[in-house]
Image (tube, rainbow, N blue to C red; front, side, top):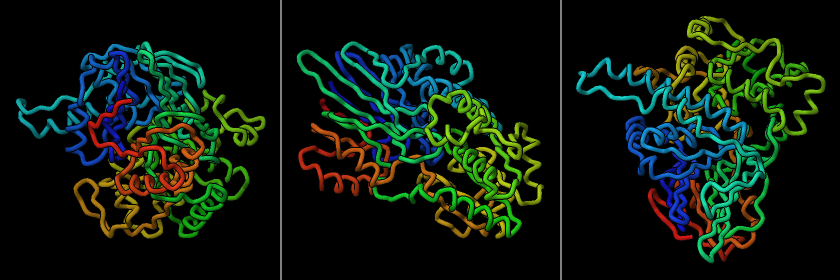
Length: 461
């Protein structure tokens, strides 16, 4: 038996980890690569294996860098089952349908400038998504299942986004049995809405994310006060707040926090717009899965049924509704996708806001290298939007406390109690973050070999 790392290998996107046991292949996650557009097109179109070579997929959660390539695998012959938690099954359908729309739209736009012989095809279409959704099978947390003979799997709470799971795997081949844990994307203690991550106890192998392996997050203890301060300072300037946010996870955390601040009269009842049809759909899934809420949210709700609804919250649907916000005078808040500002309606809001110093761009999550979001976080003097350079004069407020990824101390605290570890594989992180994290792990675990696998690197288990 072995594991091969075909994505999120010394980079932060494209999670794909292939486990082979008893002649069967099981893929942990099947995510999109996100980064330079030409590189992303190449990597996402030409996967390192055919779908027909994969017997099953175990999906940790429904972010696109973990699930985005599932329809592509279906197109190349995958016909096995895709195991995920019930909430992940619900959200994955929304995410993949939206992705198919983007593929079709992008292909149509690009083909306008090409000869028919040079036309590109979308990576997949709605029909591919509809077909592959029949292969999803929901498994609750701690409900054991066997994707292939010799592989026993349980999902555990990851605390990252709704439905996210860590994966505990027991592999048996002949007389050998090994235990492997996969963190997926690991969340943090004290985040809004979700329960805290669970801990592994004893493992032989651990595959751990390392996104923030060299960074500390702000504490979540004063999260509401910091958000309140950003809002009130912008209101004083009569500006608007533009918040790029992933449709899944970050948007709903912001909705809940704004709901709470408004109800407690810590901020005025200003208009708040969720400008993303996909975020609207995902928010409905959050309302459906109340069994995943943490104790704090349940206590806040009291007699209310829905933390995702209050009277100054508005969900835009049409493109016309979205465009009308660009001509609206502040103060108001717009939460819009995409989270890293690479595509979607957020780019239009930024175009109409970045030059005014009374406005605020509120950054609440990780921005990968080479993305527009990273350039905003770095406060570059000019940023490129729709092939035009714009001076960045708006204030940039970065709130790491809302990050849904564990920071360095939380990652180390998650690894430290695990007994029996022989090998630790760091994935889903940039090399600098991984190097720092490797040194930190060595300070308390001298017995385990620590690796940051390269793309395509394989290890015997």
